[in-house]
Image (cartoon, rainbow over the protein chains, first blue to last red):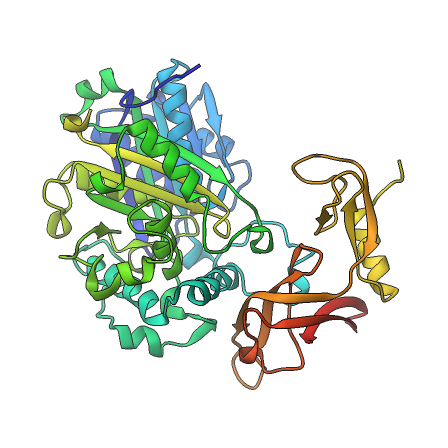
Length: 383
Length: 121
């Protein structure tokens, strides 16, 4: 049986909070503050939420903790653990729960204080008996292995990777909320300290604090809450592995599958997209996802991003907030992708607004290219 | 059906100086890392077989350390049996390891445990 989710639900509010550094606040505090900010945008309170989608990094039972903290009494709780893609999967699950009448108001929330709390990436996954003896610097080394393979197979260069970092920084310079806005050149990236070859420290995402929250309701109610609902037109996900040694082909991610499912549901293709929010934990990610989501042929991602093509003024608007590389990356970044997509589709992009943006893709990545989840969002006129 | 403790058995073989991987009796397909059943089919007929130890570098990276701590290699190796494993290539500068390079397995003992590493063949 076919149950089409296209346009059945909408994102009606989105907020970010504590981007960069939020000393003294817990991950829970941050997520809660973004949540009440988002709910208040459309005149709702925590008591109105009956579908809760949350996965803070330092609390396995955050679905319970978060509900308690804000006085939410959910009918449906989802504490998905697919990594940074969890939030695109949350949106997909929330759309199903809303469209089938299981819940009426869905809240997707995330917060992390990993920068001020520990100063490094929180490792909340189990140590691997197969990887640990060789001391890969994960997650960087896993992505480095993918980058090395892409370079070997397709002639991608470190300068191509650097283009991705520089484009992200140029977008960040247009975003007052972005954590790092200092100038960055291709040579800066090429000359930066190597962490795990071929990736330098400038090929790696930031380690920041930050929180985001998004509120979803059914389409018919959305119009009562806001004059600019952002409709969920398509969603799809796929998991191909956990550890990098089990990824079938390091140059092809499961975004090929998640993207196909999302595009099919939405009835659109890559050529229709105005804003592409692609989970850039590392520079190679952007190149892989541009290929796997159909913006360019396999292997051409490096050449596609050359000459500022994904920077402001380029041929495709990619990661307009500055991305995980230059805006915010608090352990898991997936919710920020959708928040920025919403911002662009509601015309609140300020200096970085993509003129006339109607269709956006938010693509989440979890683990080490392991979990891929794609959401297609559109304005009223795309329905 | 014989009982299988995948990780324990693998390590025990390795400590005896043998690189053993699993193979499904029905499909003939090799499996690594060791498990209680063949992935995809779920077949519970995995048996231990000795791997030849020859392989090819599928991808490689150098984990950079601050001097004087030496940087080191981490690599993905495709064994001739058709399975891929994470390991490292030694006996050569870590940044001289190349994708496609033929390598040979060697069992070394470090930190009181047997460890599988590779060196250029």
